[in-house]
Image (cartoon, rainbow, N blue to C red):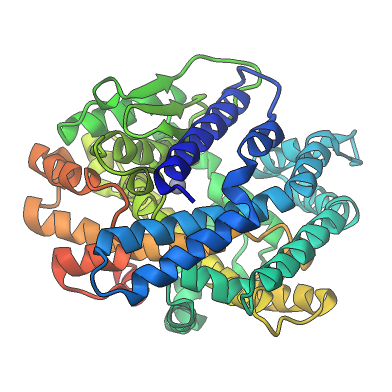
Length: 500
Ligand SMILES: [Zn+2]
């Protein structure tokens, strides 16, 4: 295998996939023909390519003379090849799932509702009964129409992992990504223990009462989207102020909203444009696309700032870095920088600087409760995914029970079993998110210590961030933190940050 040719083709593949994704979700093209892109670059994801890269990774880790960077890059390429191999093998199910989700109609009192539109309708419905009806119909459709496809994809993945010679998907991800998933699982359990019981009720109870009108004891899972949506706070987050919130945050840090011409900021209304902001690094750092359809509301602000954080990170990378450090590596890094931006929406000082007053503390109370629910949900999800992807995973019926029990315990509401197969992200992304939340908390403190509570208005803070961004994703979250502050990454910091 010619490594430089592999790398060049991998970058072409990433660019073509990024362009297709952008075109479809920006509403520029109906087609989303990723199959053809995979087919064109099939050699990247063959068993032979994986075997060749594996051989090189093994040789690089045995040989004392091999440069650290060479070993790093090889491992990133191997991870990319394996993920692509599995992605290709389950592409038919993925496409069928996307198609069914796009066309499924839910039978509801008052008329049918599209499967995808139903989540938006549920989050925006002030009527508890209606929310429960929508959720029940969606869960029924999930079990009947989607789960057979999810099941087939999971089984194929497991079979391929075994064929590739790993004992489990969990073991494979831990090795290829260099993550200590066992340790992270223990940290997740510790976080759940430290933030549960009366402490949990005290944080989320009053916020739920205010938005949903019931406490934790009467809350239903179907109410959670309405809670997160928090329409009562829309006045503080108007649609026409959304872009300026992002642009002024960039300017405060001495950054340009368009990344010096590298970020294509698309705000044009288009009928098929995704209602949720997204960012695609088609070719980092020179071609980064940030797509927004301003809707307004806190969630929308958080989403644009989050995606804007990704965009700034990608656009600030050193163009001379190898492909692996610009497009692969530890995604906990780009997620941490994105969280750093979207966390601003929770910062009373950032809000005050934009003329938003929170005299009765209701915005802060909601933000803290929403954050705790999210973090606990993800810790529950991690505990479940460690079981699904373990060599000794139980059968499907039992998995549904494990999922429901794990999520019910973490979130404190009766959680349905039907989503136990759709609530799985490839590549243990749940672990990237949790590590990113922890890293973000450290980064925020590091910035506050050096540049003050208003670090987001400091060009020096922006310069410090740019220096980190320039390195791309060469280092892991653990390595970055060790170098910045000498600390070890631990989810415990998230409980401390919440005052728990
Ligand atoms: Zn993100």
